[in-house]
Image (cartoon, rainbow, N blue to C red; front, top):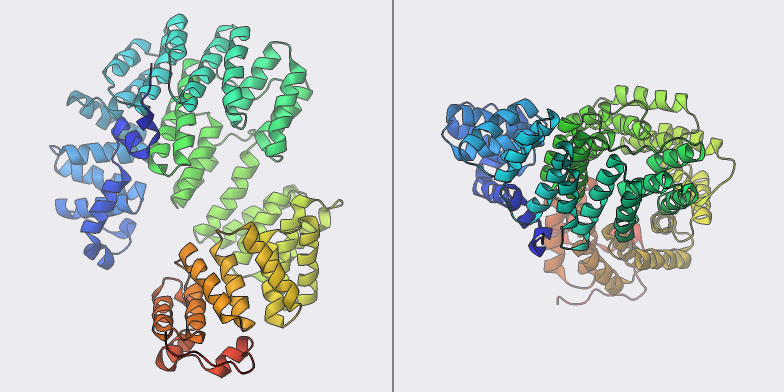
Length: 592
């Protein structure tokens, strides 16, 4: 089967799945912006009228608040069950929110009304869950899509054929897949899984080799290929595959556990043997890919379907939690992390993320107790220590942050490149608590471990200039940081501001204009650019930048009184000299 190349676009994906495009929600938000400006947070609203529910639902959808959108669309549909818009939106949002009983009810209603889109796939998944393979095939036969949806139908259908006893048809469907490399990759991977489940280990190895040759960096492909190699008595080659992956991701807990199991003669932790596990694997792979590519709501739908069919799919739990985190749905992310099995290699990482989420939910005492317990259970866990220190640092509790980072550093007997971050972050905590000698030593240690690391170069050089120390070296360091990370607005801003402080105003303007383009939401960058414009005689533009800085969301990061003074009378020599140099004989050019 040839899949259309247009399927790679997000628009094609959302249309193929019968899911509302985010662009539609954006349009609704633009049409109702006047109401949005006056309304309380969506989740706090209570709407009882149909128009009120519709407004609340569309605003929630535009804000990507899936739980609120699901609730409001459901209520709107119950008030007006004849509305296809409310029915379809309630179904989609409930699916993305993991409300499977309600989503199934709505899917059945949609199917009865003649819908041939996502409702059919959902009902097919439910049939697979219940091992009703004939019913699943009937739903898939009605599921009509283009492009991306064709791939979904073939992959799910292959596992359904396998479950119904027609493995030959399953493999024939997969072998016929044609399209971009990523399409053939999915086909080869699932063909390999089905052949492995059927006992054809040689055929499985051929399929897995084909998939692995397309993408040697995909976790599940690596696991599947290694498993096929072991099944074909090629344990040494399987170990090479796993260690090669670890060269790219040395701390991947899943592959580390697989390598340990392999070396101990135990099975690799990748088991896809039943149709339920296979269909869940289809949904997991697609959901993970979509959830990382700007279509988080669609990713959440597929990951929830994976867990619906196979609730023990721990990677789907973890992936769904990360998608919910990216949408700032902290409670949903907590639920997903808590749903992971205790023995899974990523459970520890999930527990660490739980500590961060508790802090996001403004439950700092619980967050601290949770992270402290993790560290007490394993005082050598640098990931937990680094995370707790960072949580404290973002709370501006720099004293405690430094103490926590020190706990981690004290456990290190052999300093390696990956330890640079602990020293860097402790250096920040020391600097913020006026312990400069210790801070400087940590920054220099971080650079010894990771020479030319842009964040360290930026922080240390900027602070040296602030202290009037090592000026020439600082400029060289910042120029190097910008060279290494030219798309970083805050690093480019640092270089521009240091040029300003050294009296290099034209150079400052050049860099700060770039910084504003790279990161237009930062008030401090606009403030800096306004100062630089003033010093080269561009006074109207200076006042515009200061005004804009004052009006941005993070305006509390700058001094509002200083901004007001500059708007009234401009930048004085005294103010310039309070932060840097007024070059001898320099006169601000006439307005230009």
